[in-house]
Length: 344
Image 1 (cartoon, one colour):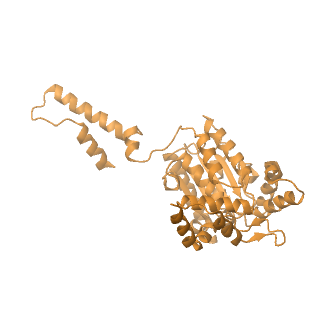
Image 2 (cartoon, rainbow, N blue to C red):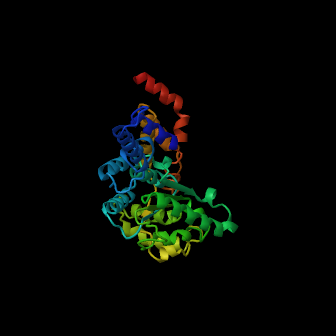
Image 3 (spheres, rainbow, N blue to C red):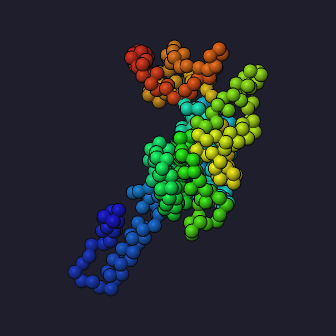
């Protein structure tokens, strides 16, 4: 970056002449100061060459909603809750605490997908952004006897990155594999403090992703189906209390007896419902379109039918959500390519 600054300053500063008359000196010094300021602060020029922290930008609600509507299937609750939570947080010039979302549901239901979309709307580079931080429990916190070290490292990492960018996003995946106690290290940063050791965390976003509570969500969804109710009639109040208590008392949730729950620092427990056959078909169509294929409904049906469903008798919900759609579609690659070429 220093070389970049020097190069731009060289381009902006007029060519020096042997005779330094007062006017020339003033122009040279003035140009150098202007050039340095252009690159020393987060100006448009500096941000053209490197990523800058989005400090005061509000999220584009319509763009986020449109993307979730087009790409996240069967999750009316998650869409509604996250959109409202993020909109309120983004429009608040002085939030009292960071936004804390805990996403729960079985694999393949869209938790990772939603968190990635949200990260991209906060920082356009998404997971590639230096202001978006993804932690995997099995990768970053693998050893039970290192919990104390992990807590210290986690606090230092969050403190340093929020100091650099107040709107940093932290995503913790595989929370159900996190050793108990590790995540409590971030509790001071989530609480209602204006500052902690001179740093304000109130503009940051923290997201937990977990399979814990998935069984409770699936049972509730099945109960609705059995009673003849539509899944779209399921409301947050039907599931959030179950999730909060269930996760708090689950030793394998990563939040077992956590002070984060005890202190009510999680703003929303967001349930992801199990996906039905029709939602899997939506995933197949979206994947075919993303690959540039012509959507063939016979192939869509074939891929969806190859998934396994539960309960065994009714076979209503995909037990892997849409997680294996890409792999299943690969098997039909020859047919899809041949069909696409025939229609071009």
